[in-house]
Structure formats: structure tokens, C-alpha cells
Amino acid sequence: MESNRHKRTRAGACATCRARKRRCVPADRGSTCQMCLLLSIPCSLNSGSRLRIQPPNGLVGSSQLTERSPSVDRSRELLYELVPLYFRFIHNIAHTMFHVPSFMRRLNEGKAFMVHIHAMCALAARYSNNRIFDGISPCLRGRIFASEAVRLCQQHIASPSLETVQGFILISYYFAGEGEVQAKHVYAGLARLHAEALPMSAIPNDSNVVYEEEYRRTWLSVHIANHWSASDMSMEPMGLGGDSRVPPAIDDVSFHMPCPELVGEGPSMSSTPRRDMWAQMAKTLDIFTEINKLLRQLSRGLISFDDYCVNASFLENRLDQWAGNLPLDLGYNLTNIMLFVDQQLGRTFLSMHIGYYHFQQMLLFPFLDARAAQNTAESTVRHGAAKCKSSANLVAEILQYSTKIKNCELEYFIYGHIAVVSSCVHLHTLLFSDVSLELDMARQQLVSNFQYLMSLKSYWPVVQYSITRLQTFQNSCRDSASDPFAMDNWMARFLTEHSSVLSERQLIVSSNGHVPDNEAFIPTAIPS
Image (cartoon, rainbow, N blue to C red):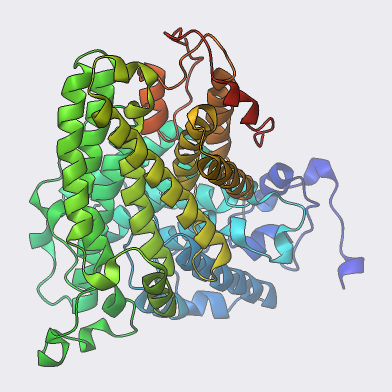
């Protein structure tokens, strides 16, 4: 019984229990502790007899799990709990790489790639209510799984495959959420290198429809990660060749089904509009990159504001065309949100639209700078500022929907950055608007954004970076001699680099020498 087992002292604890500050209790077999056995990871309790959970090919066999003690069965149950949490909160929001029913079948059969399992658990453990994590901050729960995923990945570093590309992407996103920027870029780069070694023509001839679609969606996910990673480093994304632009062949609703290969493209489907949100999102990536490039050029004085207006108008029209070309049931409205909630794709739908409105608020943010009106047509500046505020309002609205509508959660770190940019636009309204309705809405959306950030911060360490930026920006709004909305290099990095740590900002003295009286309306307490 538990009470009769020998309790190890802190000095004799294994490395895992020491790191987690947990009591290290040996398991019945003696060569591992209960914690490491439960998490299916190697234990340093007895380095001469370490728990082995991975055969040479990186797959875990069902016989290996079923032949273990009941404690190992519980570790299997933990994996079965965490992997679905990954598919609920992460997959189809940050990336699209797996056919969920097929992966769960491989997991149940003991054929899932162990790198995937541990990386998924690293991302998903923060959402778990399992008692094994009692007393452990959600932000810290994934570290053990991530360490094991990284260790297993090293065995495949020189053997590119679809599985390694997917594994590197998962690990990259884990480090991104931790605020480990360098590690994030390294693993995103490894995913790109492995993808380059595996063109679409490398798909085996005997592959089924599901495998081919996972191939396509993984390449799209690498393409997305490549663009966001480049933006975070103030660089141009490196090309992946033509393969990265091959869109998914199966629409998202069909691919979400247990057997998409049975759906087909026959006459019965010809009248059904495609609901291909990921294919639509892929069309905006080049626009996103051009926006980042344009903001950097303006901040460095490489182009004038008038030149920026011309280029911004072109990109604004491209975004508008993208939205205008969406099928009717992909347009942004509450009816369509509920339609995709019923299809278990509400998060993907909101993710697509919040990305669009974020790109708009980024592109038009420079029009909030009071100095811009001095040498540019007032109507141009007014239009840009109004549309920027409209986009920021819709970002806040989508985040509110994500917290109020079941199965629409956007509890992923990148939305913390998007919420902060939206909040900065609302601060502009509080400073400069004299319309009571606008002021009331800005206050309400600031509060809802802050509440969202506080919730998100409990899951993802990197969100604190975003909150710190917002605090810095708010403080600059209180400085009567500064022009906080000036598009200097700090502000451009603020908008385009979602996880970088920014240095202190050297504020530009405002031409009018003071902040309006509405400064009193700025909230006094931003979450910390």
C-alpha cells in the first residue's frame, strides 16, 4: 500500500521530481518513481535501469503499454487525456497538420509517433484538470513532455520525413509560447529544412487520400510558421518553393470527418460550397509579409508617409478583395460562427477572421499618428484611422465571442499579441475622441481585452511580454511631452514582432506639446 512504501528524501529525488519540487516516491518496480512512470518518461532514480518507452523507429507499440503494470496504464490514460486537449485548443487554430480521427486511431493502436505525442502533451498539459498537476502552474506543466520530445527529435535530425516536419513545428510552437525565441526559430528552421527535402512529388504513390492531405496541410503550416517567424525577426520569409503554395485539396469540414476519403468530389458534392478556411487564410500570408515590410520601411525613414499611404491603400484593397471574395458562409457574422460551431470548427472560423482584422489594424495603425495629418490629406488620414479603429473593435468582439461561445475558445498565445495591438487602438480613442458612444465602447473593450489577457497569461509565459509592452505603451500615453503613436522603430517592432523582448522606447516629443484631457480616462491598472 501507499503508506508502506519507502518515501525518498529530497536528496535522493530524481531529476524530474527535483525540478517539479514534488516528493519522489519509488514505483513498485523500483527502477523508476511514480511521477516518471505516470508521465512515461525516463527516470534518473536508477540510471542503470531506465524506463524505456520508445522502440528504435520512434513508435510506441500497444504491446509495450499493455504488458506494463497498472501504473503504466494510468500513464497511457494521461496521454489519452492530453492529446485530445491539444486537438481542442491548439490544432486547427495555430496550424493544420493532422487528420484527427486518423491520429487518434494510431494512438489507440500504439502506432503514433512518440515525438508527436510528447510535443502535443507539452502544448496541452496547461489545459488539463488532472490531479497529477495539482499545485503546478499551467505554464510549467509542459516542460517534462517538451524535454522528452526534444530528446526524441534528436534521433531523427538527419532523417527528413512528414513526421519530423510535424514534430519540429509542434516543438517550435511550444518554445514560442514559453518565450524562448531563439529555440522557436531554430525548430521552425528545422521544419523548413526538412520540408525542403521532401517536395510534394515525394509523396508515395500508394498513399491514401488522408496521408496526401496531411502532407499538403503540413506544408501549409510550415509556410505559415515561416512567415510569422520571419516577421518576429524583422526578416523576409525564406521561400519553400512551389510546394508551400499547394492549397489543401479537401475542405475543412470534410477533412474533419472520420473518413474524408469517402466524401469524394462526385456530383453529390458539386453543389456544396467549399468551406476551406485554411486555404483562404493562406492567401493573406503574402499581404501580411508586405505589411510588415512597409511598417519597417516607414519606421526607418526609408519611405515618406505619403509613399506609405499609396502602398497601404494597395494592400488595404487586397485585404478587402480577399474578404469580398469569401463564400457567403465564410463571411464574418454570428450566424456563420454558430454554423461552424456545429461543425466543431468555430475556433478555426474565428481564427481566420481575427487574423484578417489584425492585419488591417496593423496596416492602418500609422494613421493614428497626429503628425501624419500635417502633410497629408485630412480625409486620407481620417479614413485610415477610422478603419483601424473599426478593425480593432472587431478584434475585441471576436475575442469576446471566443470567451462566451462554447467550443470557440482562442486560448493560444498569439492572440495575446493581437489583443494588445487592439488595446493600443482603444487607448487612442480614449485620448482623442470626444464622442461619448466611442469612449464607452473603447473603455468596455479595453476591459474585456485585459480580462482576456489575464486569462491567457495563466497558460502562456510569453503573454507577459505582450502585457509588458502594453504597460510601456500606456505609460507613454501619460507622458504629456511624448507622441506615443509615432511610427518609430520601437512601434514598428511592437506591431510586427509578437514575441521579441523590446528595449526601452525613446519617445518622440509631440508637436502639440500635450496630451488631450481625455488622458484621465486611461485605465490606471493594466494586468501585470
